[in-house]
Length: 168
Length: 168
Length: 168
Image 1 (cartoon, chains in turn cyan, purple, orange):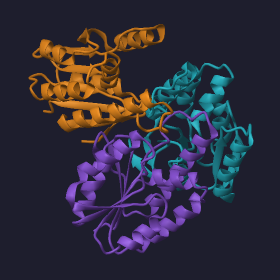
Image 2 (cartoon, one colour):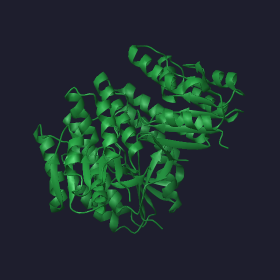
Image 3 (cartoon, one colour):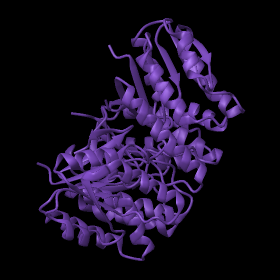
Image 4 (cartoon, one colour):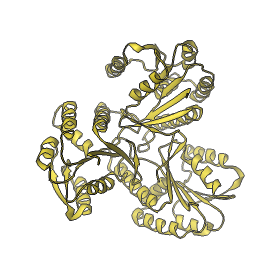
């Protein structure tokens, strides 16, 4: 049985739905670790849509920064779904944290979990080079983070039109 | 034999060429349902390039909005190629129509066709989050539309560098 | 044994690492043909990171424009890695050269090589349609160039999260 699964894909490619299904295959109930914080109405609407879809088989932990703490705290409570890594990265950068160190620490923590972990991330590097340096730095960091976690993961899937393609 | 085929991919990934070949495998002559309208010289040049490539085995229906009407009208005339869904979505949004209702209706209509249908769409969610809310709403809608049609489709392919990868 | 291999993928998808590994599978030592020019500190840092990773098994040729010359000059010296095509395209456009002619000539030259060639390119068409016409022209050109080289290539891989997916 796979212990760590990474689901990547573009915006609205169906990553979350696939990740939720993969998580529930690994056990029930499951723990949803949300990295999103509701700053505005648009984000709030997205969070509510996701929560409504998941239903009663899930308990939710909101954790924008300390994913290792969230994993430690929920280990043994069933499979965990972290949704999503790119938002976590954005939170780290916004908070002035060293994303590379934190990503390495996350990968080390993933290797030590007893309960499985499914992680959702985003493909953000498939468009034209962004105009501003911050956006370039962010997409570079997201790409490196994705590579680090994919290296650690037992299986990697890419969501395309709501369907999962096997990458690893 | 597959009845409904969805071909997705980024800009200039070779989607249309692959879709045309897939359509002609399903029968000749074929019907090309174009959602494009020539607003400017750039768009006109793209349309002409596509038409010149297709040649005499195709009849063309230009239909920016009423795809269900176009499908009803052409059913029984050979395989149909709809190129493309994301432009249709853009036309719907521009016309103030409810794209989600129209997309659901399109999927219901696809299920009832006698002649096969090949649909081209675009991957637009693989870059950095766009700055403006309209672009975000559009890429979210495109992603949902793609998922809906992929769910209905018998087979889904992704074009990469002019080559088709099997997704479903 | 494959003679021409194309590795595509988004920004920071791990293309270069995969391409270097594929190149060294084809022989050692290998030749690195760099299309990058260090205009600013950001670019210089990227080039240095890449060079440090490659180490002593590589000799480096910097060639922003004349890839055919670089291929002719290095044929027989082991497998060559061209990194990357999209930067070459950008250099061509910046220099006012006819990228389509040059791309066709490159493909013709690839077909005549004795030593293998691995080429890295970028997926740039997976985001929202860019606002400005130059960016649209560039991503269209990149897509066409990728299709031309993929047609010529014996094998094509797409990098996702540092992992290679077989496309051809």
